Length: 218
Image (cartoon, rainbow, N blue to C red):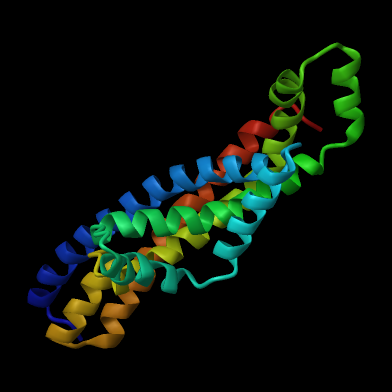
């Protein structure tokens, strides 16, 4: 068992690492959300080259390993003369990766709206932007929310990979303590509990958002 003295060292380090993990989750969550809409709208663009280029980029990101992407940003780019701090590399890698997955959520949710809704907007002489803003997106956003909630949970779990890219999140902090004090079972159990607490909080947040945006609907 871990002694009280060791806990007094471990818990502050775990909290310090958890703050880094939460920062990554919030920053990358916001950026991946924005990239999801940029990518999703690009995939639905009426301009063929935009669709092709965005589709190629998105499929490349989705089809390659997040870990390799992070390693490339941290270790390969400097060989090309571009130096990025590990923390910034983690943000770029996570945001691009989960933004690519999110773009498919946006695309499929918009396409799930019946075409009659668009035809009704046309009948009301609404512009494409007005139709998207007032008719299609409000309905599509309700469809997106559960999938975005799952994506944020995956993003949270993905943040553990940044410890391998020299970023001091809570996984990296626990690995440091594991090498220092041992007690692998207890330390890794603490890490599991910490991820569960954060993940459950994210789940509750998105359930609340789903209820809020579904209010008044049968």
